[in-house]
Amino acid sequence: MRQIVLDTETTGIDPAEGHRIIEIGCVELEERQPTGRHYHVYINPEREVEAEAITIHGITNEFLADKPVFSQVADEFFEFIKGAELVIHNAAFDIGFMDSEFSRLKPKRKTADHCSVVDSLAIARKKHPGQKNNLDALCKRYGVDNSNRELHGALLDAEILADVYLLLTGGQTALSLDANSDMAGGGLGVRRLPRDRQPLPVVSASEQEAAAHEEFMTALAAKAGDTVWNRVTASK
Image (cartoon, rainbow, N blue to C red; front, top):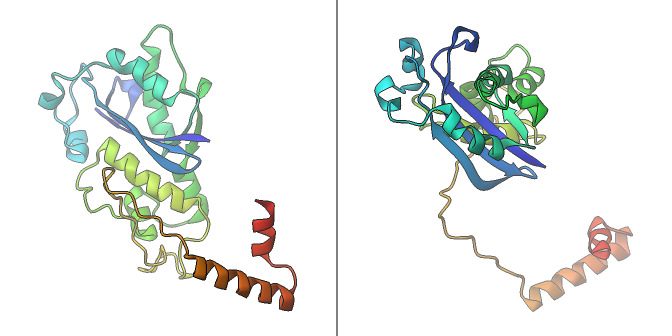
């Protein structure tokens, strides 16, 4: 399954009042694994960014002045997300803005006609009722490093949300029964590694180690009967 973890930043909170998208950040997952592909763009909204919004994301009118308008990036953005399952925190907000932007173009498009949508906020609220479930709270709960998140930014938030979503939907992630414990996430903080890092070496067992393992598994099967290991290896 191809999934796109997506976030946007905007000029304000309501597209019905003419507010526009100013930043899009997307991270691609295939079979719940990051592929390294992403989509990121800043957009000239052709209107003023509200001062209150700037305090949240730090993106100024001056910065956006020379950026492309949405119609110039719409096709590239659409091709990146088309056919994917979109993972969005508070999906109604971002989808509302995306549909508003697509409605200004010809042909008009509606996101739900081309993508399915998963709302990670709804999942978090169901899994952690009565608790804070914004992205910062979930990072703390699941041990995801968000130390670089001083301001909201679409690509950074999408990368962080990808980590959170995989932990949120991947079964047990904590040894503690207390979801508010500082040990939530099993004490294992999730830190993204550089994409240009050296690949990890693959170390195979030596002939002596493989023979010792085979001898042990044979003795275990003779004592306990069939084993999961034998069933798995026999099926390969």
